[in-house]
Length: 178
Image (tube, rainbow, N blue to C red; front, side, top):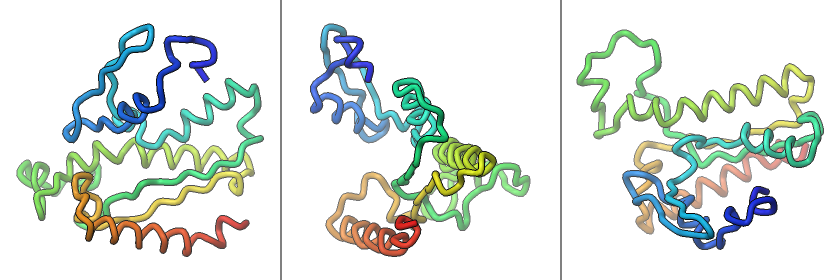
């Protein structure tokens, strides 16, 4: 929407796609230029679940109350919570915080998923308290740690993820028809 108002924000789609895929640790920030320079990283760094931001932007652009919206929020998968460090759990030593089971990092898991979980909780509660719980649906699949590794693009893992996606769609078919 900003691109309609401000010419410098009207970037080629290829540049936008490269920038939105520049996940730190995996890819460097993406530099490009319109009438001004950009140095961008994946938006998931700040808002991995952008539902709340999207609703606010839509309300601003369309000048409508959120009660007019029907939202389907599709997650990209969350790591299985079994064995994960929970916030407030006082039974862990510092070594457990840094590295647990197959080199996963519970502290990193918390930092990466906390904002997603809070956004889901806020959006769900706002629609529920407004009597509009049917206007908000979140679909998120739980993944094993090995399936959730962002750098595992092996043919085997991609086939597993495709099967998980198909099963998720099948299992939520009735929910989406409502």
